[in-house]
Amino acid sequence: MPTTPSARRGGPRRLGRRAVLAAVAVAALGTACAPGSDTEQPQGKAPAAVSTDVAKAGNVTLTVWDQEVQGGQRKQIEKLNEQFQAKYPNVKINRVSRSFSDLQKTLRLALSGDNPPDVVEANQGYAAMAQFVKAGMLLPLDSYDQAYGWRKRYPKGLMDLNSVTTDGKLIGSGSLYGVSLNGEIVGLYYNKDKLSKLGIRAPQTWGEFEQALATAKSKGEIPIAFGNQEKLPAMQLYGIVQDQHADKQTVRDLVFGKSGSWSDGPNVQAAQKLADWAKQGYFTKDANAIKWDDTPANFAKGDGVFMFGGTWWASDLMDKMGDKVGFMLPPPAQAGGASATMGGESLPWSITAKSKHPDVAAAYINFITSPEAMDVSVETGNLPALAPPSKKPEGALMKDVLSAWETLSKNDGITPYIDYATPTFADAFGGPLQELITGKTSAQQAMQKAQDDYAAFQKKK
Image 1: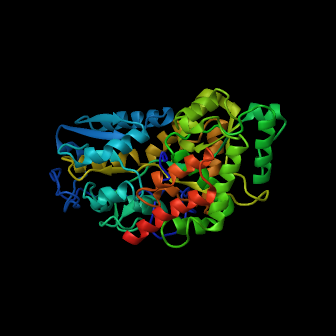
Image 2: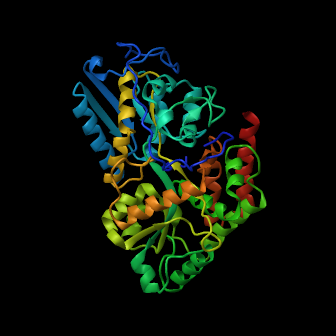
Image 3: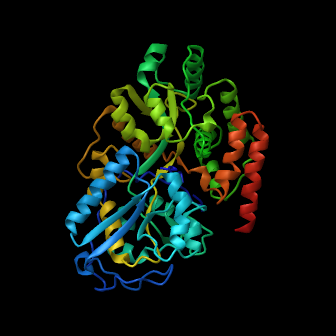
């Protein structure tokens, strides 16, 4: 989540997703490499030997920090934690949950302390994971990967998202520093009842979508439910519009620092579209004062015909709205065309460098990202990163979500979260976008500020 929640990257590579929903090839677990190795490791260094025998670790309290606070996410991790402790009664999980924003604010301080948690959800990208790796705060997982076979279980594209070089300069290669449980898409939610009352269908093209916005506004409805107090929501909305103006590979190359400029024509055009929508009154009034997590709650109460948001909100919306809510990919320019939108996978579960129980921590990560965990993901209304072995989604909304994920995977249509472009992009671009929405800056000026931050970071790499 998010960014989603997360979105959530960097490193010059192509985000292929064609194999994401292929049948999971579960790697056979090897025998324990060396018993009794569950001791504190040197900071930021991979353990020379690991053990997969959790029972031999003795009584362990494993402290886990997560941001699984939304309804479906919370149910998912609570159930997995319960199952893990039932399987390993010698392990007690001390769970500390925080919102995505609060976790990002407190995690660096916790990791630099003398008694950090054992397992954390460390967001991908230059601003979080790459910085933690560079500072030696996270443990490389390559030795545990050899024992548990994560790279064999997951497609390379997903493993790349959680891989960083030890100097923190390149994402997409280097050592593995985390494993994710869920997939993510930022798409378009819509209120079926409101569409019916307005006499319009779910849009099949981008043109139909914009016409629907105009119709909703003319009939006194809020066209797009939108809260942007944290700045990140506007970046995600911008990214969706950007995918309508720029080729998906161009967007990938730009975010990953391979080529391009944020002040290029298509990127400025995307910013201008946001400014136009704001001027036309398509957003919730005073959007910059509304919290991100309040947006789906307001939408469920009837504020808004459409809402852009991540699949991490689907479970809660389904609970509150039932079959009255639908989900779709942002519609393409031409009917039947391929859609592109940002997404990837949820925050990865990582082991802190100072963990006193890295072997147990690794076993925990393996358990909560196993094929069986993918079934739990479906049961609790989430989108699993890999095909679940036996469970199928229930309810129209979750079927919409899974169908969208399958379509994007087949068409290689996922673009990266743009806040990964630099360590400071969330403020350097998120702030100007807030000003753009209120009419205090122009599209060209906002994109130039984004480019200035981007160019400064590229120069330092």
